Length: 270
Ligand code: NAI
Image (cartoon, rainbow, N blue to C red):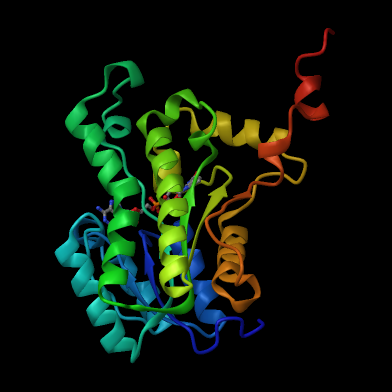
């Protein structure tokens, strides 16, 4: 451990269970000396799993639906009170598509569901940043990270309307990153993670196939949730102060590989 986040305060969204990327990030941030609050949608807390993580990390839990401005205002206000000052980092680790859940095809989407997908998975980042700015809740050089997937740039058919939501999430990252950087030197980035076996990940039809495909196509293999937590902690640290408005691929090289020899072998004439 390197004390990378010693004295830093933050909020971590999205730890549902021990597979969640946010769960692993909370554990790593705690090991690196950070103090933070944990939050999730009230419905996601009914199993009480998050309390185990809270005890382990000496953190308080504040329920918030990330689409509700009222909940977000309460979250930021209470977090500053509990942690004793303005914040230095925020992890947005939130994704949900009712169309994916209900098995709607991309060419036959339910539009109420589509709005919900965009609100939960993308606009929630704008709402989080706008609330933080309004309450002046973030210190200079704070770091906000949101998690995304390469379906924002390329088509993965089963990813459905989540691909559109991730494109919007990455666009909001750039646009708000500009404004927050100019106003308060706050940086905003997305980390584009490999397929990872979590509740959200495994909810995508054919998850195993595209997990294995990405693994074979990546020179370094798929990045794990623990490795994503390490990268995120580095992005929260002072060693990445001039990185902002970026989409950072954390995928073992998948995004820039045309084809790997391992993948080609599967298509060679026998
Ligand atoms: P997860 O299912 O553990 O986390 C998703 C979280 O979003 C859950 O904690 C859920 O309660 C929360 N959430 C849903 N609706 C919410 C709302 N209205 N308000 C507040 N929170 C809400 O799954 P995972 O994989 O850890 O997902 C975290 C992030 O990583 C998501 O943005 C996901 O799209 C992204 N990601 C995941 C990949 C994967 O293969 N698992 C790959 C690339 C990115």
